[in-house]
Picture 1 (tube, helix red, strand yellow):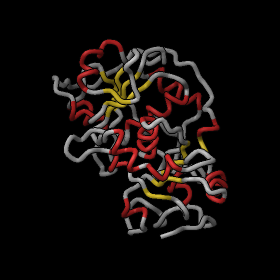
Picture 2: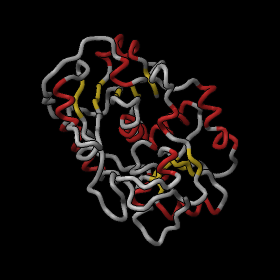
Picture 3: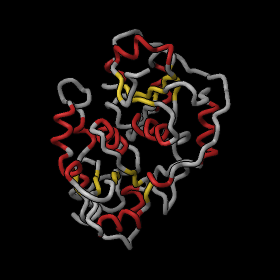
Picture 4: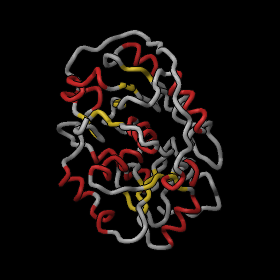
Amino acid sequence: MEDFGPLVSALWLRKNLDQVRLFDSRSYLDGRSAPDAFAEAHLPGAVFVSLDNDLSGPPSQPGGRHPFPTPGHFAAAMGRLGYDGTTPAVVYDDVGGGIAARLWFMLTLLDIPAAVLDGGMQAWEGDMVSGSVTPTPTTFNEQPWPTGRLVDADEVASRLEAGGVVIDARNSSRFNGKPNRIDTRFGHIPGAINIAWEDNIDDLTAQMQTADQLADRYHEVIDAQGQKPVAYCGSGVTACHDLLALTLLGVEADLYVGSWSEWGADESRPVEL
């Protein structure tokens, strides 16, 4: 499919629904149950994928709140969800792609065609279905993560020292150190620039901004010379939305998976407000 990814519209998905594997990746920090929300209503043909159980390893330090799972764990999860990696995947959530982009990035790292549904499930104008889904298990071949695209805290510090660009995808409030219930320490990695992932989304359409608008937002990244940019967020999830935006602009960037949940918890790491 030549017109596939890294974003697809709801209209495109309706026309090609039988040609892709659809994943519902909703996740909440406010106590709501994502599996219950899926059972209440989801797109036809979707299976629920858990950020905590399928797309992450156990929280750790170092490692952060959502470290990447081992290749074996990820392969087992995908197989349990009935996905063998041979069909293009479309991932959606209900926040414009901020959670969906994590699985998009993971599959893309393994050279598996994947896309995020632009505008999320709210953009879908067709019928929803209800009830839980039990996929038929299959085999997803285990592949190692390409470590060149996943950087650790020392590499982030090294790139900053060398003049590289490091992007903090959290909102400006958390970036500037306003006390909150999520972060263990408040502030950001010294030298990082703030490009909040939510602002990749147009307030009126709830879809990704145009290429020109994104280029304006990411001009510091586009104009930078030398090392590839690195993106981080709270725990290596929503930063993938910034990576998605950069991909649309033809810029490849790396992910600091541990993100602020790792850096901020390490008292030896400097913090800037």
